[in-house]
Length: 320
Ligand code: ASP
Image 1 (cartoon, rainbow, N blue to C red):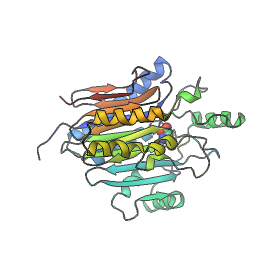
Image 2: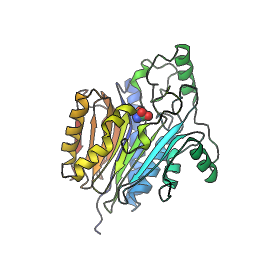
Image 3: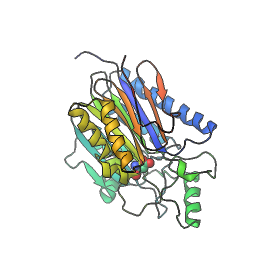
């Protein structure tokens, strides 16, 4: 097979604002560094799936995002994380739901790729972590704990935690920060893969299941791959990732598929964003939320969506 130019797009959540300028620069630095590292791996000929796992691990390590270290706390003050991984080449989904005390939830999803039982939750997830010999890891940061304590004092008024971690102690606008992460890669051999990892909405009821480890939030086949972020219930209601991928599979151009899906989502009053890649190497995104924190590598250079106009619904970078 002829070698093509790999493509990478990652997201760090969607919401109502990126925050002040200093914060935007910190996020940009983080995102550009991670997208660069994932691209470097793809350049060595690594599979899309391996590149996606690396990208998710790097983002899970960053306290700026609501995944792995720096995840938001649920209503009972505990962190429970979920991750989905889909290999578009094999068209195979695996996932882990509401796992605690691990550093990289994506590793559990990756481990399950060849397994007979490919989506595990709660007790099964804890058993799997033990079986994999994962050293217990506490993902709670001081910022997250203080955020939860403030919310508790306020009798959990917020519908959603501030899901991108602030570097300052008291965020000015907790609603403005979301930070589920997603990574989509097209490798040099033309294979697509996608991974999504999250601490959830934050402040949610025990047992709530995020969209991130379902095909609504994370889906890929040979034609396209999509990772979503935002209100999980909205993403489930639209079955967003699978909806976009199926439209591309049935012949719509990726931008047209996003346009159609995001127009429908706007009409339904949804609040979310998505990143996508097509097998032709088109890098694309869509959002109904005000901001989408995403960065991409075209093979030629790095770009991001951090300063898009508020009303922007979709965008695409065509391959050269
Ligand atoms: N989609 C995630 C959830 O609802 C949250 C997010 O993307 O910020 O669990």
